[in-house]
Image (cartoon, rainbow, N blue to C red; front, side):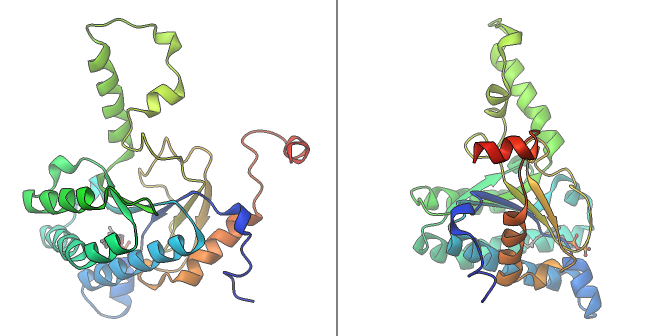
Length: 249
Ligand code: FPP
């Protein structure tokens, strides 16, 4: 029986977030340039979105470029931006055909103008799609997102006093980039690093974390299904006891 066939179709997570790590090491192991690792990484990103769509996941968030990644060598940043442009150009038709909606989270004002306009164009063209939503975190940092949410909230109410004590977590989350997306039930990180790296800090409060040593360019559909299988073996308690969860079932 394949790992995909072993999945419980009644327990597919709605939203899976992925920290795609290990492109550089994958390239180094083969004596190749880091950018070759990113090229292969872009293929693994596509494969993962396909795998997710196959089993009915509704949202996949991919950490493609962090706020901190702006500090990488100039050539690597330029290479990643060029890869993003070429990926959008080559994938957009397929994206539309496969009913995938594209969404970007992050501080896109920092992107080079030609990247920003291509990204905006792809997002606009896919807006009517209602299959899987592929969320690309670009120029994304979670602390920055939370700080900006606080700023937006304060700006909105600065001339319009409101009852501070009435503010709920749900109200606050409406000011995050992910205001219209459910929290991920599962976060996957590849390459053996055991860190969150400033990714979706608010949204992953109750997510199951799955770490694998596989380097991102090698991450296959089977690896994705394995992560989902492992997730399905976990018991999500949200602070309750096992007994309470059993009684609820
Ligand atoms: C981490 O590997 C990966 C990145 C910083 C970039 C991720 C980008 C892609 C997978 C390609 C573009 C994606 C899309 C959706 C078009 P690393 O460079 O930190 O690897 P290392 O830790 O081994 O050096």
